[in-house]
Amino acid sequence: MVAVRRRRFLISVEPWNGCVRPPGAVCVMLWSLERHTRLLEAHQLQDDAALAEWLTGVVTRCGRENVAIDWTDTLRERRKLALLVAQCLDVPVPRSA
Image (cartoon, rainbow, N blue to C red):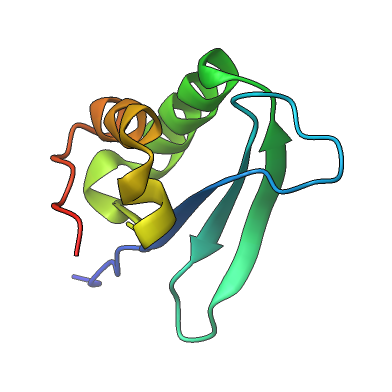
């Protein structure tokens, strides 16, 4: 029997800091946490609906148990955004530091 190694992924969600920033816009990244970490996807999403759709797609493709979220201080401080991410990934929001 051959052992199958699970792939691990990390999601990063940050408010978009572009020159012209639409309200609610975010930057998202999906990282592969293999031996050599690499960026798999990066997007600038315009609103909560687009973020929810992207997060749901990542969970569907990668498997919920294989996906972690990078709970940065900025993400935790933006309560509405943090709650949306937590809801889509079915995880609790960690307390702020």
